[in-house]
Image (cartoon, rainbow, N blue to C red; front, side, top):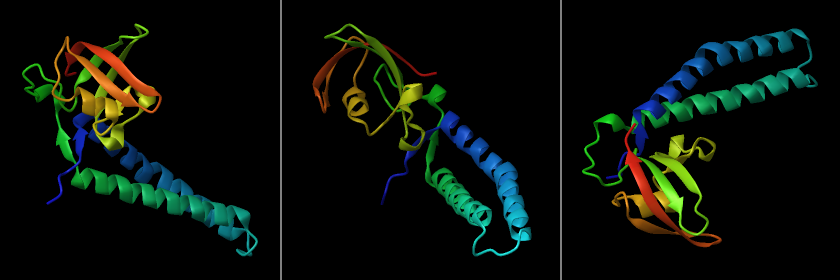
Length: 159
């Protein structure tokens, strides 16, 4: 039996909003573009028609993907997590790089919602795997491609 991939409640809401926009805004816009391109005549040499059809294919694939993710995910409300001080899925963690004294804040999320630009890291990433089960004040070593990086866990929260 396979486990259901975790997804935060906020991540699920974000995907639902994207799905609504794709179905109610983008799908009709592309259908209109296809109809307009058809009206221009010969479809063999109609670049607008072929571009709109390609867009439609990509849109429908994204819709199917989001629907699949939402139907299979285990949606977790991180505000209800009882972690007993341990880092688990959904935790927001402030880390101190011991070597250069830089601090960084990451939230541990599911693969679908991981976004390094927003400091959201996948539960399956090396840094998240090193953090799971640890507590504030502990030090961890992350095996990175450029070598090991040591961090001290400064704070852990669930927001």
